Image (cartoon, rainbow, N blue to C red; front, side, top):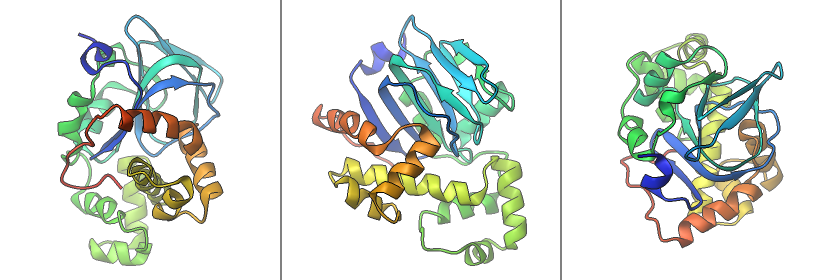
Length: 245
């Protein structure tokens, strides 16, 4: 049974432990790259199209984009986009089935949130435990890199190298990604765009909007109606042991 039948067809935006999910319409996005794996899943019987940095169009029922790969999503009436943290266990399954670039992946055509959720709580088997601890510590946006490295027993240079090699993401970009998740979580709690920007550690609403557009191709204003519709539909907020911030 396809995801749309199992989860309904209404709009949805949620931040969970180790992943985020957007379901709804998608306009022509700007070129962007994010600090997570993206799995874009079409509605039943449909296709999604992702153009890579060279302009090559990848079309299928599901398309996987690894972290920090430039791409652009073409317009689609309904899509579910999973953003999977590269240091969680579900990312290992994605690594096993895709290359360094955009990959058409029909095996994920019926991917649903309940398939991702249990693995988002578990650490990747290929990520150094010290790097895992550092990524978790970045929930505190005030911690500086030298202090973060010392906390996990690494030099700053070694920590940076581990992040690039094992996550495929510079720590500076990962910090922004976590800030975005924290800001979106604040929107889900009913805060205004300006309040959410401050909650995420951004200088102001414009800064929040620029960073989100650069990393997701969407702006907070575009996401907010979907987030509000998801909340008004009475769907419970996900229960998890740590906030995906």
